Length: 84
Image (tube, rainbow, N blue to C red; front, side, top):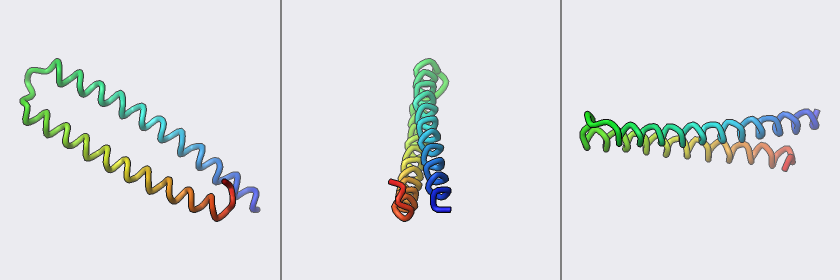
């Protein structure tokens, strides 16, 4: 049973790392698209651009907090089961 638990946590870790890499890649592409949109669009005023950039910054901060929380909890589980 203990081996199964360790394998399960290892699978969770692997899935989590893949998710974080995918999330990071999508965020980078989204940032590039947003910058391209800002440079090519003449309809957005500076205030609107600033508002969108602040919104994106808040989302990134929330993502960072979420990732840190999950990492900490995964580490606790790994420590309890002795998988790392």
